Image (cartoon, rainbow, N blue to C red; front, top):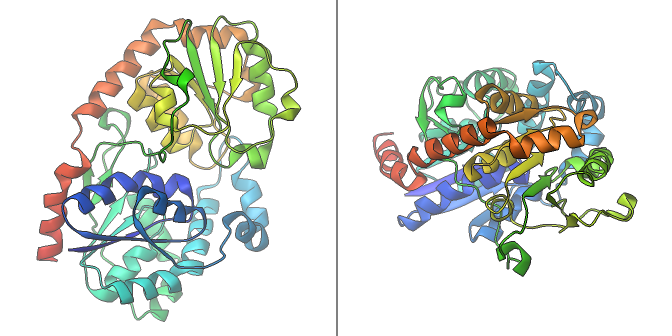
Length: 374
């Protein structure tokens, strides 16, 4: 079976699909990932990748074609859902030709498309093959998909597609206790993938005191600066715990001299870090939120736009962590994050729930049957 994966051109969207891609590869199937920009890093996972838009840089593209829209979406708090849909439609429209061209050449038996990138669904309709939607977090994908498709009638017509399938199997990786079920949802365990690395010795050593992992994802720090981190560092100095700042390739000189209990590590695989932490502080990205839930640690979520308010709300409603803003970063909140046994108990409960969800490998036979029956 030949399976084409289609995703939004960003790490946070392609990485959640890697475990299923490898489950299919391990079962002997031919897998190709079609995307652009930073999503090409899926090749680091040993997957074959097709670049549908050589030279594409997501941030440059967005600023040059949708700058005002992006600025609104990156504001903390409530966003206009239509702004998000316009952005999704714009990106799909821009990369659809490359995705359809790749699909025409690869001739897949099945297309798995990440919930935002419905150009994969259009390619499936053009080829007459089944498609499966792969969600990446807590945002519900069915209505989002339908509304985005409704904005792409010209794109569809350009590729000879009059309509796409109305009912699409949806791989839902959110813990069932934290979301409303998708209409055609297939529950699938979220298996965090953060790329591989040689782990530093200190991460494998026994920790002498509680440890808090801190990350703001792959884009937030570059866009919004180090303000939240500066507030956290100031508060951390008064808390008896170790704080590990995993901020990626960011110049942290502006933080000045750090307290003895604060460590910067650049980049480290997030799951490897959080499994060896007692709590997490982060920006609310879906992948980070699910990684903290997989690790069974309470989390303080500081959502900063996009779908992150949805993710933070799911965590808060379930009781697995706290929500706030950078202004809420103070020693009292950090001590509560580490000492509130109810938060810790719920976080462990969700970890057990995730462990009981069907693995990506267990869903391979269903996907094989879908490809056979069309």
